[in-house]
Length: 368
Image 1 (cartoon, rainbow, N blue to C red):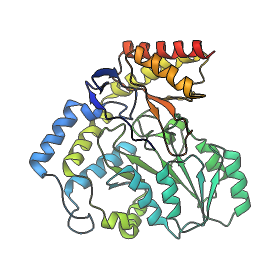
Image 2 (image 1 turned 135 degrees about the vertical axis):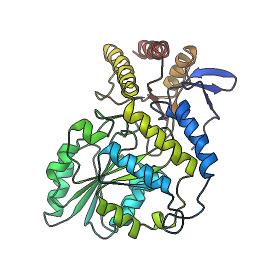
Image 3 (image 1 turned 30 degrees about the horizontal axis):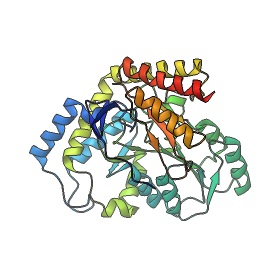
């Protein structure tokens, strides 16, 4: 994979690309909380009060009170019995798998699941079966073959990062045996989807009693770190059985302080989600009028797959003409030519959104 260019994010929704200041429709900081004044102040206060690092794992002498406070705040936000904080969202899936290793009979995983879920599946010490992307019928057929006496676990993203699509969780749960589990990597949906930002299950109106939800604090919450959300018994298993939890140094204390403030903001400031929802609705309604097949979800992610190198160059030119950084990405498992992934945020102005739509419109007209 070619190393991407160096970028400097400025003024919350722009980036310096060389010497040019361009609108930035990339990354996953959906509310730009990474640059929110209150979050930055909490970070500074955390440095002054706590220092940088506990320099020990939580299982030895590094179990700082700030981590417990953040876990309680996350548990309240997501309305779960327990939250278990780990140092990243990627690690959250591995911690779950290590805790459950040997306790499930089969792992069924979406063929386009995030790499962290793929790695987690390998840690479960059971056969791993891939199912067709977002295909509930295929899941049901696999579960029928492995039998009702099995104890399977289904692994899937809650909102897929490549296009913002949402899996048919209800269909998966209908086929899942009573003692089966669903591991939901909600990294992109946490804070974004659902009436209160609790993620994919809340957006779909589903009960979470058979789900384990993992999240990151580096996207909607704008900071860093990860967490596992679920019953208190799962937390106990992670603490006792996960080698990562036992041996890993937790997130730096100033980041935990900043994350606490970020969770408070998303819990109490409805206007952020309202603005994001309005921006997503506006852009997608205009794209539908252009007959562009944007996914019918409140997801802020919009993907465009170029047919060839000429189309990549064409869209690059249209975007740069509108003062927009071209977000062409190359992701493992994606198309070899790469694809454009646009991420809307609550802080994009109407002018920026209109410039993006102008670039899309020009590209569509030339493409057709």
